[in-house]
Length: 122
Image 1: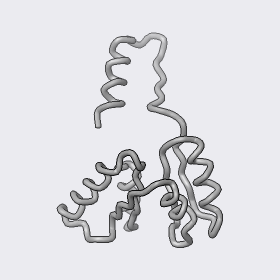
Image 2: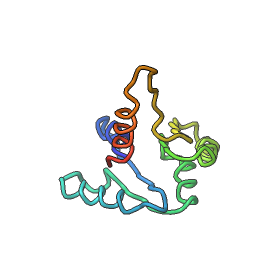
Image 3: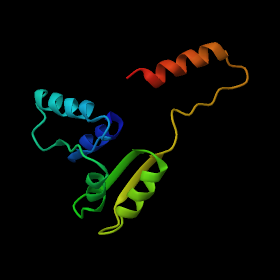
Image 4: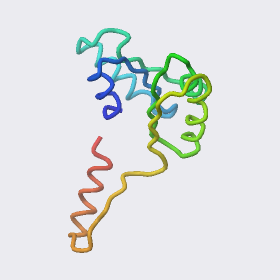
């Protein structure tokens, strides 16, 4: 989430975060922390909900960009819905989980250990 929020905020824009319906609490807490840190209300907006919520955001004419990480199936829907009312920019990170290239001369045990740490660090 931070990888998507950071550039948005650095460019002076506001953001709406629609977390996965199974995991809204982290995003809600980040919204609270942003307010506690002094970020004005309305700059970071957290909008929990199900697929319909995401669909409405993707279609809304005042949403200029959609960035999504998740399944290919949902990515197709976002791509379709994002072009209904305006041709908005979209970024889709789909169907993978922490891809890595491990060279033949790598220390395999170390590579596995570091990758496991990186995947689960947050």
